Length: 116
Length: 118
Image (cartoon, rainbow over all chains, first blue to last red; front, side):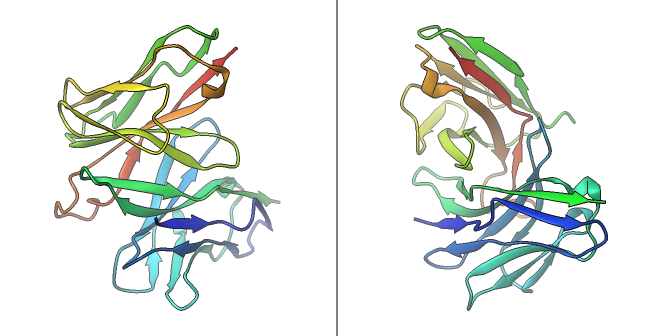
């Protein structure tokens, strides 16, 4: 089964500093990887995905993620953090369902806190 | 477009009561999913549907039933609620895998239903 791990429950960063939220994956075959963000009392919002191609994927709100096959990682990054980036971030990997469709297997989430 | 909507937003049940959560999407997606979110566990798939009239079990289906009578709606039912079903429930939908387009692998989520079972 495909899986992802987010080793940090919380990441704290000062506004204006670069941020990294870590994710590692374990898959058989080629990975389809995603990052979602969840603001308080809201549903998950798609940030970006890696399917194939360039290892650096650009997404919404200035976020990007670096796919590293040798380290089986897909870390989320942003050059300059904003207080409004404070939220819960989920890494996910796509797994195919027997009956068709996709299943997203999620990590446990990383709470990002950006402080002034 | 409203995207994916869920009703109700909040609900408190007593053990043994039943209820139905409604999910609706206006994106003409074939695939729909129900997840539950619990602290420290990410999201887990309860049931899913690959089209109108079809449903299938996910990772944690016990205690839940679903129906997809219309393409745009996906209902999640709890026949006899238990405290272990206290959770936040999310519905999601997606295009058919393999459909061309930049979003074809992406799932769109509703705002969630917070359910407490006493």
